[in-house]
Image 1 (cartoon, rainbow, N blue to C red):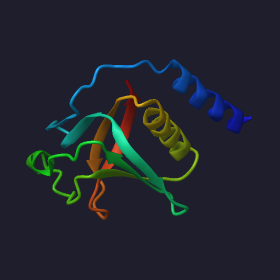
Image 2: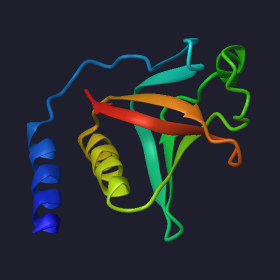
Image 3: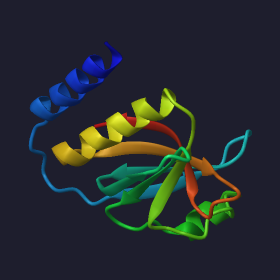
Image 4: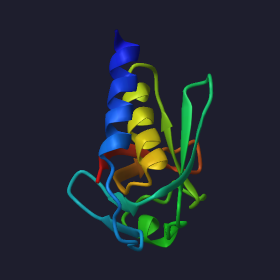
Length: 129
């Protein structure tokens, strides 16, 4: 049942995708009382996931890590991808949204924080645009 729902939502997203004008990806970071965060709006280039519950999402355009460092997110040293370390079922939702964006050539909006032991910024929230 869950697999059917997952596949149905994936296909629905692909079918509903509409051609959009080419826009440049944006990356910016902000400070707030609970700490800094960064936001990427743009397309993704590829996805990677393994059996150790590590998912990498590669940005279409590499990000500027100096901005992340300026708001206290000096944990990242790799600006070509973001990471999501998780257990199922939450990874399935993130992966299906990213896969839909990749296959339908849609933009995403991702909020990022620190993943201290990885070298990547951590995916915290995701929206399909």
